[in-house]
Length: 295
Image 1 (cartoon, helix red, strand yellow):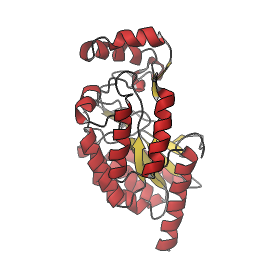
Image 2 (cartoon, rainbow, N blue to C red):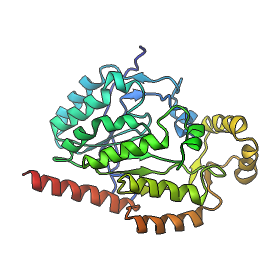
Image 3 (cartoon, rainbow, N blue to C red):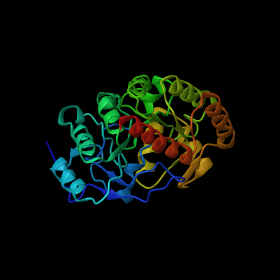
Image 4 (cartoon, rainbow, N blue to C red):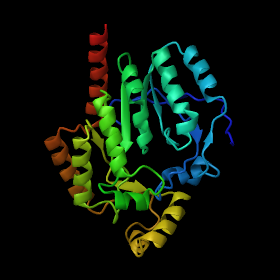
């Protein structure tokens, strides 16, 4: 097995209650991803990720993480999944993410992650244990309401139905969990039926929040990969992108305003939080209640 070298694991973030999901540090225990999502921004050349489709665990990741956690003068929330999925296929055997969660529990840190893998349900009880002493948040990316479209744009990952089952397992364990409905792909996943379907199925599986930006980004590297996939699997859609967006970085759904209105209304009806401040405050308040009950 090929390993990547790591000099540091904990990367400080700029924590915000209003602009994004709150975290104090980010870690990536793996380099690369095998999900094969046709839209992945991490393919962008600016990230300098060579052989992106090859997953490489980071050498001595847990030893390094424990050393860094012990050196911190204060605890905080550690997020996983910014550049690689913490529940990629190698995790089933290597258990680096599982080991990292155990270290976060031992040293009193909170935990959060973003994943497209149903494997995350394996650690539901561990995440719930962390939540008794520190904030926790599980974000499952769900872009498609139905498995058939999901498997065309995210070919090597747990289909939507399996992610929803994992979301239910997390929710049943008492974990604060929700969905990341990004990206919204113009002319592919930007239908009203798809958006409403994702929200209703997610709420039915116990989601407590949903976040959506109603578009996607394309940079050098991922643009070429995405357009090639469109030519192969969705004939004619690439031409729509070129006509509508040219080489623009931001590609909002043409019906973004209408989708946002539907999103707000459906979230209100389903009881889903969608503003970052509301989500972050709910996470913190939930942890405070857990701590009060635990003490």
